Image 1 (cartoon, rainbow, N blue to C red):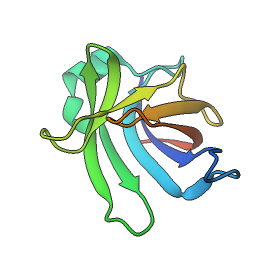
Image 2: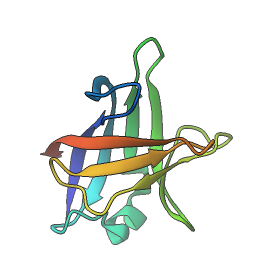
Image 3: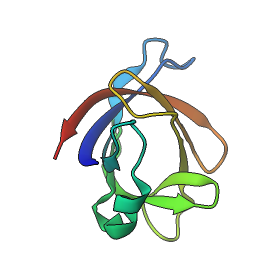
Image 4: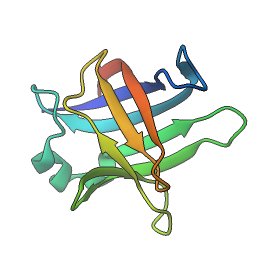
Amino acid sequence: MTWTTIRLELGRTPAFPNGSAARSYVMRLPLGADGQIDEQEYGHNPEYATVRRFWPNEPDRHGHLLRTAEGWALSYAPEDAPLSLEAAMIRSGSHMTLTEPGGLRLPFEVKALGSI
């Protein structure tokens, strides 16, 4: 298991047919060799699992990874509904989906991984 920095960039959508590097997230997660979030390490240090959202014309948002009954989610504040995170495995070039509280599903591509 290694704590890893992960950069996600918005994938192809109707509004962004080529994706958008300007719409991105940087996350710090504990990943196992299989590219899965290491639940045991997360359980020992959940405060280390952070996320930062970069979006044009909006202030950066900072939050944390949460384990929910439905799976993994990103939360910026306790009073905000979290975004669900769907990923088969997290590897460079792999894809994941973030689903906003209103149901909008956005595709993201893992553009960079780095050990902490």
